Structure formats: structure tokens, C-alpha cells
Amino acid sequence: MIWLSVVGFLVAALAAALIVRWGREHAMAYGNAMPQRFHLGDIPRLGGAALLAGMAVGWGLGVWQSCQGDPGSLRLGPWVGNWLLVLLPAALGGIAEDMTQRLPVRYRLALTGASGALAVLLLDLALPRLGWPWLDTMLRAAPWLGAAIAMLAVTGLPHAFNIIDGYNGLAGMVALILCLALAHVALQVGDRALAALLVSTAAATAGFLIWNYPRGMLFAGDGGAYVWGVVIALASISLVQRNPAVSPWFPMLLLIYPVWETVFSIYRKAVRGVSPGVADALHFHQLIYRRIVRGVFHDDESRRVLMRNNRTSPYLWGFTLLTVVPAILFWNNTPRLMGFCGLFVVSYVLAYLAIVRFKVPQWLRR
Image (tube, rainbow, N blue to C red; front, side, top):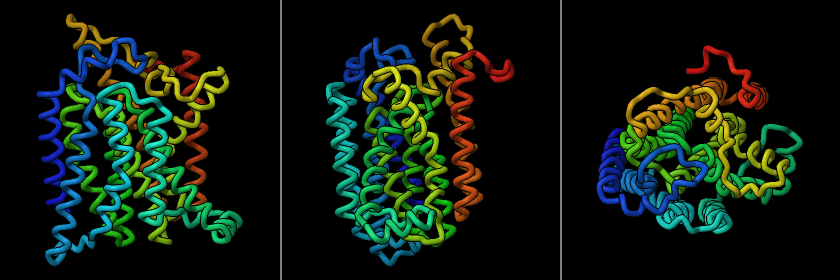
């Protein structure tokens, strides 16, 4: 597992370096008027391609190692190729959008939907239980409901990661934390194959992050967000499906930040009569940037913007850890996990309203 991580990290970091060196021309296509733009200059948005390369090589090495006697007891096999096939429609669609800025939201949603459909067809992915007896009975009576939930998760989570991707190191560090948390529980229940894939994904993410944070020389773009979303969705459903001891609310609590950010975003746009597909600058991380992280005094404007950008992400890393820590502690305790999910939703809404109404404590503003 260590070699998979080292190779995945090095390949992703090297691919990212090549993109930073040769990808400037495509970066000019990203207009200055975009509401999600919180940087100066033309920065390549093809980090997803570097991430995909690092993951594919790491996973391929794991399959090769398993075929050579499996000294690390990884138990990886040809089925890993199906994971890559499931990942490709969403990843390539995101990368195409990053290169052209012309792929409409409905097409990208269709491509992540294709990944969801492939997950059900090729991986037999389905959510077997929800932690409530009457709902579990319904899932057993109608197995297609579990498959539909799995398809919805694989389709929607990539877009949830895309929503929280806005500042240097934000989505990448959240993805890295989630992958390691899922890998930790996978190892607890003896699922080394799933843990190996997740650790390799975390390592490739780390290879991307050295170019993304703190200097912001490369962005993940839609491609990177979609890769993280699909892989983490597949791993979350698979962990619950393959290991009865794991509560289905464990991945729900892990992912509650990007999931609730998406749900809340759809709600507030619907209230204003705006399509959910229209980008805006009112997401939680954007409000922290505008209202909590104060301006940085520096003679160079781009340096000032970069420093302020970098100060935003740690707030959200801490916010994520507030759900990750209890999820890891109570990964097999459904009532407690459900309680923490409810607590997060209430805390998020109260924090959002406090920021909007300028009622943030002075000690939080820097």
C-alpha cells in the first residue's frame, strides 16, 4: 500500500508540474467576470487530469502487485478496471469543460449520470440499508431502490465537490481527509482492497495539492471535483454494501458538508427563482472569504489576493473535521451518527445566517 501511495503521489505531482509549465494558454479561456473567480492571473484548471493520472497508475500498480503473489494482501483484481470505466465519463466531461468552458451543466450532469448508471451495471452498486427498520424492509422488498440511491449518489456528489471547490486547498484537502477517513474504517473491518484504492487516491490528491496550496499554481477544475466525487461516492456505498458492521450514516456524516452545501444552495436559489445550475458567489466558503477573512495589506495586489484566498480554506478544513472526527469515532453507531448529522445541519444554517447578518464574533475575523 505504501508503494502505491508513493507512485500515485509522484505521478500526480509530475503531471501537475507539466500542466503548470505548459498549460497557460488554455487558462486564458477562463474569463475574469466569472463569479467563482477569486484570483488574479491565468491559472491552469487541469488539475483533474494530473489527479486521474496519479490514481490510474497507483491503482494499476496495485493490480499488478496482486497478480504477482499479492505480498501486501491488497486483493486487487481486474474489477479495478471497472472502477476506472465508471470514473471516465464524469472525469472526461469535467476536463472537457475545464479546457473549453463550453460544456453546459445539463451535459455534465448527464455524464456524471452515466457514471452512476455504469456503477450500478458494472459494479452492482446498491445501498443495502438505511439504518431504519422500516426503510430497510422497503429496500429488501424493492432492491432497485438501493440501486437508485447509489446512482443518485454517484451522479450528485461530483457536483457537490464542484460547489465547494473555490479556494486554494479547499476541495483537495477535504477530499484527502475524507479518503483517509474511509480508508481507516475500511481497515478496521478488514477491507484492504478498498483501503488501498482510497489511500492511492489520497496520495494522488497530495501530489496535486503541492501545486495548489498555498501558491495556487494549479486548480482542480471540474475534472478534479468530479474525480473526487465519483471515487468517494463509490467507496462510500461499497464500504457499506460489503461490510454489514459499517453504519450507512457513517459516509453520510463524512459527506454532510458538501452534500448539505449543495442542498442549501438549491434551496436558496429556488427561493429567489434562480436555476440551481446558475453560478453565484453566495456559498458558505465565499461568505467566509468576504465577511470573515479580512483584507491582507500588501503592496502587490495579486500577492494580497493570494494570501487572503489561502486564509479562507483552513476555516473550512476545521469545519470538515467537526464531522469527520465523530464519524470515525462512531462509525458503527447509527443513532449517534444521525444525531451529529442533525447537529451539523443546524450549526451550518445558524453560522450562515450569522455571517449574512454580520453577527460573527470578533475573534473569528482576521
